Amino acid sequence: MKRAVVAFAVLLAALVAAYLFRSPLSMMVAKKVAAQRLATDALNDLPDGLHVGLCGAGSPFPDEKRTGPCTLVVAGKRLFVVDAGSGSVRNIGKMGFQHGRINAIFLTHFHSDHIDGLGELMLQRWASAANTSPVPIYGPPGVETVMAGFMQAYEQDKGYRVAHHGEATVPASGFGGKPLPFTPGADGRAVVLKDADLEVAAFTVDHGPVHPSVGYRFTYKGRSVVISGDTKKSAAVQREAAGVDLLVHEALSSPMTDLLRDGAAKAGRTNLAKIFEDIKNYHTSPEEAAETARDAKVGYLLLNHIAPPMPIPGLEKAFLGKAPGIYGGPLRVGTDGDFISLPAGSKAINFTHRF
Ligand SMILES: [Zn+2]
Ligand SMILES: [Zn+2]
Image 1 (tube, rainbow, N blue to C red):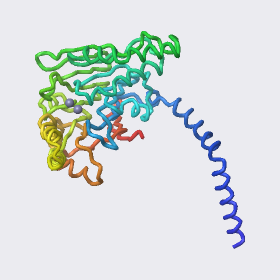
Image 2 (image 1 turned 60 degrees about the vertical axis):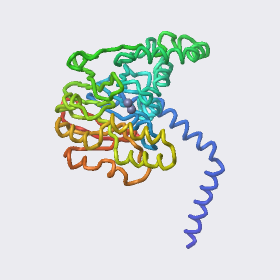
Image 3 (image 1 turned 90 degrees about the vertical axis):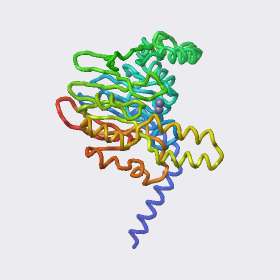
Image 4 (image 1 turned 45 degrees about the horizontal axis):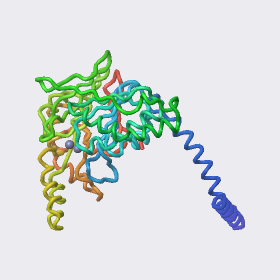
């Protein structure tokens, strides 16, 4: 009994001391965390192979688990980003990657939700590592217009940064991005990057009236991923995805979008009701994405560009509908931080979540 009283008194004294010294204690922890975070570079730690992460699994809708579209692709020691939605910069950092090491950015199309994080991403890529040349930005024709706008919008900020930190820290030559437009050929395809180990091909998808709109296929040392971009169910995605290890496919649930449409109509918000009705005709349902995955015989289906959001537990099953019965392989409704590793010289498909 006496012992228990003493133990309780000691515990109480420790808690009081921790409370009284909470400020220096939290600074001590913060010092450790800051040093650890700044030294982290996932690119150095990953095994050789192709790795794909969702730095944004969502759509224009607000969703706690899913920010705007962004897919990170690591091929060996190279770091690429496909689309740069609103949460890209923060999520890439949270996933343990350094923005300064981004080798290139690929855009699927120029809908605002795919480019609204691009300015910040280019800024971090430049300023956090003293890059001396702008980041290559691959995209279909129109990418020059987008880039000219961003360069103009950030021109004043560039001046402030150089004046404040100096040319050695933020070399003016490395500011922004360099647009590299490509045009798919008659077969709807363009190889945009190729060397001994890596091929990146773009292919036209069906997202009308958005023309052009493309998806990408990355192949590295025998491992492969197809990223659908925004599209209706597409024969081109199925063709490109034939036998790939991983298909990252956009998905929109029509029954759930109808709930929003009806709610908007009931509230008298007719413009929103019209938009919620319209968006159904240029996206893919989870069931259709599952059909594509089944028919292309892919190794893993990761859904992204999830719409609408799912704020209530249990909605994922409703979102997927009949999809799990259509595609028998591993299937996941993506969230920010999802990460799939495809090690070179192996058939393994390893899922982790990086935060
Ligand atoms: Zn989109
Ligand atoms: Zn779109």
